[in-house]
Amino acid sequence: MNPIQHARISARKRGGEPEDYVEIHALIDSTKMLCSDNRHRILHTFWAVQEIVIPVFGHTITNSAGQTVDVKDLCEKDHLLPDFQHRFIPTLGDFVAAMGDLPPNLLGQGLAQRLERFHADVIQDDAISARMLSPLAVTGQLKSLLITHNSWFVNTILPMMHQGQPKLVAFDLTPELIFNPMRFELWMDNGSDVPPSAKQLQRLKQVQV
Image (tube, rainbow, N blue to C red; front, top):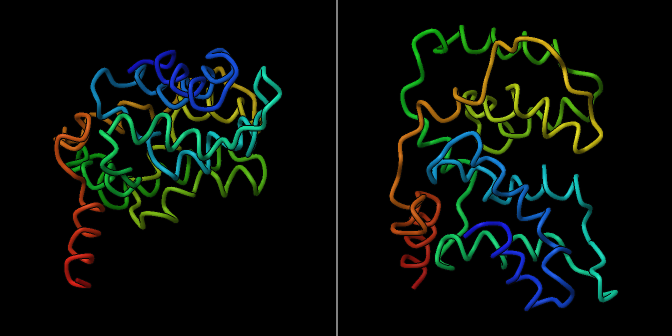
């Protein structure tokens, strides 16, 4: 589905007009300009809702009918779940796990050094630092920082949060480093399979039964 289709779902459920919601859904799908297949869905996660969507739009919005709408609930029920057949919501760790073989020049200490240089070049305050480091906090994987340490995040996402100005420079790290090493998994394809996090949850439920 495209953003306007998701926005129509929101309008039917929550009142108002599709235009009240389309910018939120467009942000969630904005990574389509970085990757043309469903690997792009790195923002279809609770990490992205908490660290990107809510900082941009706030915890609630008021639609054209004067009704207060919970942004987290809207993202979850009108976009994330529908795109995965209401079967699951993947974690950021699921996407990072699919980032298999990084290019040799990004492995080991080389990756850490490049990320440290990038962070030092763009950091402006502790709030920006914490947001950019949040993928590492939730996944424990150094390569997860490629999701925030790139030209797209700095020049598109941070300015939307009023946490920085676009930089007219040649960036060392670009969004292609997120997706070039990422395997296409069936769970990304509209929920044709379930991701590792959902499989683990299924196993836990079976043990409890």
